[in-house]
Image (cartoon, rainbow over all chains, first blue to last red; front, side, top):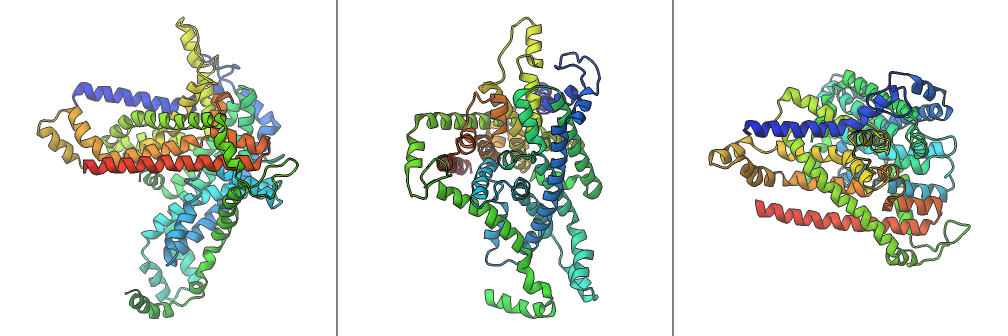
Length: 269
Length: 298
């Protein structure tokens, strides 16, 4: 639509301010991490890595970081395997219960995660494994990441041309060979973006962790949260920056493996 | 019809009768177990516990009662918290709608090269953890924070921007705005540019075209965006606790407190369920109204 020149300038200005609003808090955290002072002043006092040193010297932060990384990797594997398998079954084999199963697979998404956390906490204590924090966190995180894997894999699977598999079979390939040489490579983009979603969501997950974490099982976002309740110390900024870097690395891996469009296309629809 | 289709498929199936065909349901088994045992059952159990009697020393006594619900509904304090939470939901939905509309409108009209960059700027906040983003706002909004430094520098004193409703509002709007933009984009991109061109050539001004053509056609996106943001806002936990500093109570905070600190499972469960039902009722009513409004347009 043709706006007047003044109208277009006005719109551009408003839009620029809105993007600034969206990105400012993230940029500020990174700037604070590299700033030498206790408080972020304007202009910044100077470049320093002391807060990163403080982070690496802090046992609770390092433990939480390693814990989060381990947890996210295990959750990614669980959610990806279970979600992909379920997606294969629902798209290809289910008849009567198809819509019910689909609904079940995505149901952890629309319900508030904090409520799922509470229900899970009460249930786990009732069956006597409430203190098995590591196991419980794996379960809780897998629940909230599985819908993403299911959705990304199903999207690819629905548009999948089965004649390729039939061709492989008629040329004498066994079912396993067909699966690993034909099915899996075609599903790759869906599986990889699902796995990356699962990793990022688990690594940043908060509400479930808040309720299920225990002594010696504190993920990084929870450690950060507890820290921020009492202190503004920029060590938290260093920890945040490191977790932002982790996310960027994983997004770059996705870009390398399947191309970023597969993430965006899903976001747009 | 069903049976012929089935019969037609059978021979082909016989040819391809691989071990995997019969055992296909095994693919579904892990997901079914996981979601059945650790998702559906806990929610049913939550419902069950909400009807049990509270007692000290144990999570609950196995005695059926409506008291938890009656107490939740009777206590005026709970209603104040529920109203406060819903108000955050209403205001956040409305403000994010107003802010996101120009952003989404601008993006649908951007050239495809700029669009990729804009999309990255829009989506990257979603990839950063919610605690990290809250911390960013804490640095900006604190009493000694950057915004207050600027205000003091201008000789205007200082403003309390955090540990109150203002801080919580700003944080909520920031966190949930990308979801609104994405919902609006879907509808706005589907509008045929010819429609707007037609309106213009028939003499409608910019404002009139926007109000009479673009806005009505984008209503489905407006409906889904506002519902999404409302539901996310009323169940938010991190923003109200960090930017509200526990001085601003919302229902999720109250429920977690009741379950974790007061160890009153029945009361916490009842509260959670009452609030869940209220939220669903509001969303359903709203969607019905929107549906009627949209039919009026079409």
